[in-house]
Length: 271
Image (cartoon, rainbow, N blue to C red):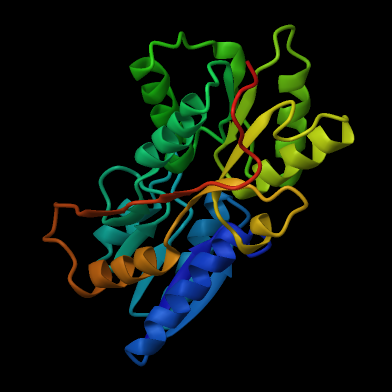
């Protein structure tokens, strides 16, 4: 009656919120959730999985999927029930947000405010969530007939520090953007901090949209416009996939739609 949950870190509020949602969903069926953190290290993921399996968990929920990670396939071959959450490898059972839609809606929001030169703090390319949000950004630009400028795409990690570094690099461009879309809450917070320290006002000088809608972003001096991810729905979907796994050799993905939450950090482009 225990489910193992593997996340990169619990200092990341997004992952902490996912774990809490899974723990609450488990409690409804009389189960408990045991968590392990691995700092986004593939070898540590495998060690954590093995430890949880040895403790007799009934299945694993992995929020650590990344390019080149064969752990889900190894678990399948061993007959260990496993589901991916928040990130997917494209073929394992997965409960994820509709990241492409989220990236599209965030970018479309800025376009609708009159912005055309929109930068993106894109996250790490090894994570499907980053790749899909970037794909949504590109789709929105293409639909609006806005030429994609590769210099406005800045890869990063998911940390506050990475968001600050990315914002500094973006503002050092010869032709600055009028808006930034950060695909993660931490990077959005880091970007807002760096912009403020540089004397750049949000949204007066530049608009900013983040992702995940962790609790703190609505309480910042400039509350952040963001995409809200329903972690409770993702957690429930992950347990549903564990309880009713797809047939061997097949996969299932449950997509949960995010919602745009407009706040003060995004504004109409001044004419």
